[in-house]
Amino acid sequence: MGDRQAKDALYEALASVGKALGNGRRAELVDVLAQGERCVEELAGEIGQSVANTSQHLQFLLRAGLVRTRRDGPRVRYSLTSEAVGALWRAMREVAHEHVARVDDLAAGYLGDRSHLVTISREELLARMRAGEVVVLDVRPPAEYAAGHLPDAVNVPPDELGARLADLPAGRPVVAYCRGPLCAYADAAVRALAAAGRPALRLVDGLPEWAAAGLPVVRASA
Image (cartoon, rainbow, N blue to C red; front, side):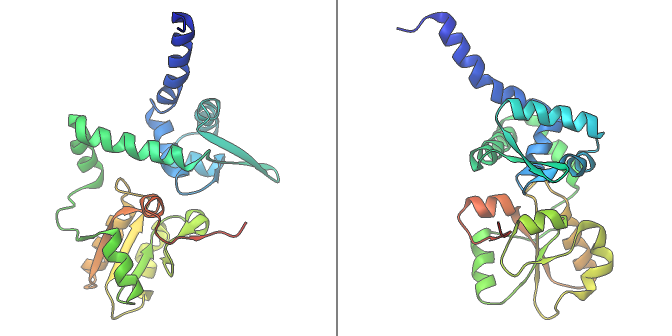
């Protein structure tokens, strides 16, 4: 039978994963890295922090084993250690929505009123893609699109929505997707398209959930 000290050490090691995610900035970094690898400068811009602060958060995640690094010339690129980290983040997010009373109100405060946005499930979207019935719009930054995207998806980055939505192929509804259920990029695209008179829907979640379900993803070449 194991002793108390050994058991304490074991549970402290297990809890280190929770401690790593027990910070809003680090949780946001995991959410961004679920889209694909990024360098610290890009990540700093995504989470609105200095490069120095972002590096500290990344080192915390690195020590906990949740991210890994890869040297790319003068830059160091970060990625999630495995799909299990992305699954952990999704589970943590779902538990918070189910059991933390303020989360839904806070999400609504950030994302706005979604009651008028039409959503589409992954299964229905896949069927309509295969039938050629929709235009699929990826509204994530180009680096995330390059790392992986839905087949035949057109990439229009968030800062180009206003200028490029009119260029989308006409005659079919547009389905927009982005990082996941807490991402506002697809919402903005659907609202802009609807205001222009184009039928538009939002994928119920995002690329990580689509990939986790085993649905087809176009990945960057190694």
